[in-house]
Length: 244
Image (tube, rainbow, N blue to C red):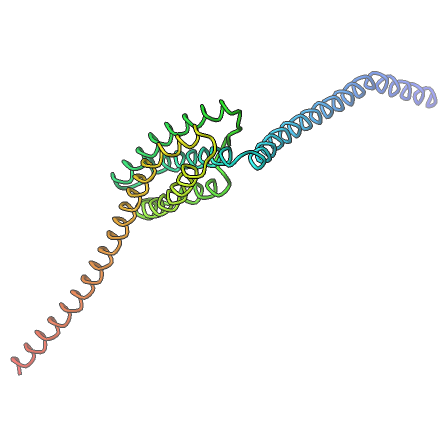
C-alpha cells in the first residue's frame, strides 16, 4: 500500500514538473531574448556616440588642414554661439536693466552674425561647431550658480575678456585673410564687436563703482556708529559730573 502511494506521489510530481517545464523554458528563452535586445540597443547607442565623436574629430582635422579663413569662420561661429547662450542666461539672472539690455543686444547682433557665418560656411562646405566649447560650457555652469550683483559683475568681466579676444580675431582676419568674402565679413562685423567691448567695459566699471560705493557707505556707517558712541559717552560723563 505504501509503495503504491509512493508511486502515485512520484507520478504526480513528474506530471507537475512536465507541465511546468515548457513555462520555465519559455521564461528562460524570453529572458535571453530581452538580454540580446538590450545588448543590441547598447551597441547601437555606442555606435551613435562614436559616430558623433568621429564627426567632431573630422571637423577639427578639416579645420587644421583648412585655410586660416576656415579656422576663423569656425572659431567666430563658436564664439558667437557662446555669447548668445551666456546672454540668454543674463536675461534670466542679471539684476540690473543695463546688464539685461546689453544681453539683448548681444543676442540680436550675434544671432545675425552667426546666420551670415552659416551661409558663408555652407558655400565653402566648411563644418561649424554644433555647441559651445568646453571652456564656455564650464563658464555657463559657473555663472548659473550666481545671482544678483555677483552675477552682474562676473558676466560683465567675462564679456570684456571674450570681446577682447573676438576683436583681435576679427582684426587679424580682416588684415590677413585670404578669402575675400570672409575678409569682408570680418571688416563689416568689427565695428559691432568694438561697440560690444566698449559696452562691456562700461558695464564692468559701473558694477565695480557700485561695489566701491557700497563699501564706502558701510565704512562711513560704522564710523558714524563709533562717533555716536563717543558722543554718548561724553554726554554721560558730563551728566555724572553735574550730579556730583
